[in-house]
Image 1 (spheres, rainbow, N blue to C red):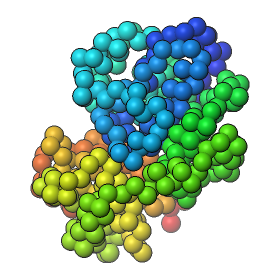
Image 2 (tube, rainbow, N blue to C red):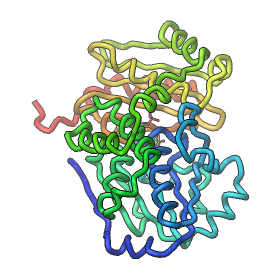
Image 3 (cartoon, protein in one colour):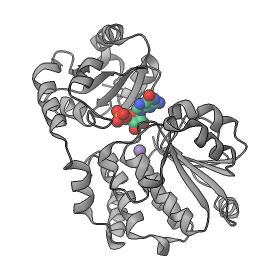
Length: 345
Ligand code: 5GP
Ligand code: MN
């Protein structure tokens, strides 16, 4: 069911009426929606005369390097002291595309304890109650769609530039899986039509995001399909496990494994797919499912995670081998335990 909290628009207008020192942040390992919605808002707030900084907890993938404004982004883990100084002076902190503060990793404590007004704009389930203003809609296809809605609520459509239109378009395009996930409503199409009217070059955005593979990435994908894909047709589950050694061997970078899990889900008869990746500090799991199989419940119950019903993620700190063992145990009953059909048969 869609859950929606709308802004107190008059209060919000008052908040941004005079120039303020503003931080925009988003979740670790930012994707196109995280960075696109952040930069869309960044350009708007700059146009309105605010002093704005975008701070991401960790680096974003190279395929987002085309986004106008990304050159001004501060990456928290690369300059913690410098970023803390800026955050300490902030009057407003926007939190985009995440619903609980642990998703900003090492930034969590300074943001949590900051006196700045906090504004949450997000479309994930179960938001933590930390914000002074919330624009939260689980029915939204992307946080970028909510940024567009916000611009309309503020009567500022005339402020949308080509740059803003393109970064917002990128967020909506990627979070809807190029307009094919169930979240792709008529409103989504109306929104992107208006972004195209504002000058968004959809071919440029598509090519910049999807057609900028490195050779290493393609070779890695080939290896993953051939050697690493585990298919359990009887359980309707398929998954990949990627070790830190493999990550290093193929010289992978942030973003290079993105999308792989969707191929596992594309196998006929598979309803749940996972990719498990061993990083230095933690093991990260990405889950995808179809229909009423809810991977967000699976992620939150077993892997300290969450997300959307059909796309979620989690983490594990027990090492790769034990994580895989735990996962392999859990999938034995996945289809029985995580089917939340509206009308059970
Ligand atoms: P991805 O698999 O693309 O990294 O993430 C898919 C979705 O899962 C994201 O949109 C996000 O909502 C959610 N997600 C991924 N990792 C985590 C996590 O560690 N914790 C929570 N709560 N959600 C996550
Ligand atoms: Mn999103």
